[in-house]
Amino acid sequence: ETKSEILKIEIEIQKKKGFLESVMKKLNNSRFSENAPKQVVDLEIKKKNDAEKQIKILEERIANLSSWKLFSIMKNVLFLSSWYPSRVHTTLGNFVRYHALAASKYNSINVLYIVADDNVKDYEIKYFQDHELKTTIVYFKRGFFKYLNYFVAFTKGYQFLNEKNKSKFDIVHMNIMHPGIWQAIYLKWRYKIPYIVSENWHGFQDLAKYNLSFLEMKLIKIGFRFSSVISPVSKQLK
Image (tube, rainbow, N blue to C red; front, side, top):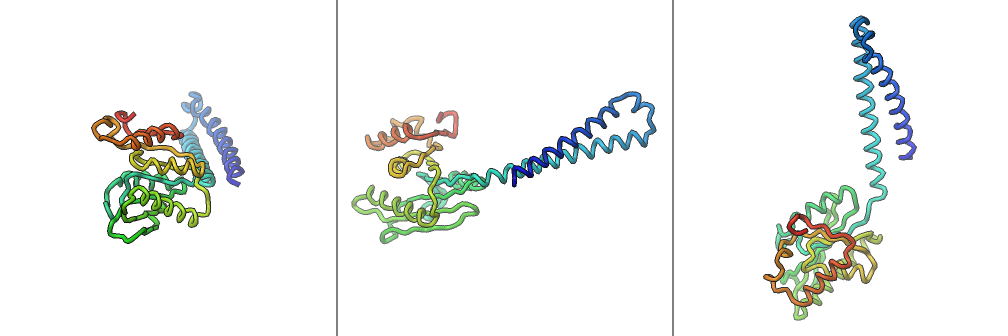
């Protein structure tokens, strides 16, 4: 239906442009503009202005219809991030939230963020709607096996989203590779979901001073290797 409507408007635009061209021929004819009565010339100028306005309106309608057509093929995107605002730290990674909010105007976006909170007894999942943005935060208590707790929290959050959405994610958008890149790598390995990376961390300009472990460095290298797209947010990071 959208294609048919766009086609009708395009035909109407061509008619208006043909009419405008005939009016412009008159106005550009010096014999007409110099010899015709002023009222007649003014009428042709009005026809010209009206035709230009109508063409602009029709072109805007096509642009709007094209936008709605894009909505019908919007992607189901899972936003992951090493930093994100939560009750533990209300401003950490707030720029990632703004990015996700902007993207949610054109795609279906779910944010999944896991964060340690030693005030909880075990695991706690909080889901809420942030404008068009669907957000899931998993709080967990760090135990003796800290990294296992992170993994369990992540799998619980992902399972929760799968049950809630009942649809497969088309792509994962990983924000800030260190230390959370393992989440995107796991989903690519386990569920074959491709991922892209937006990188904001200035630490990549001088990794040596951060004393990252062998495993952390290895995960970063794997993350770069298997990412479909890497988007640094500055020339320095590039």
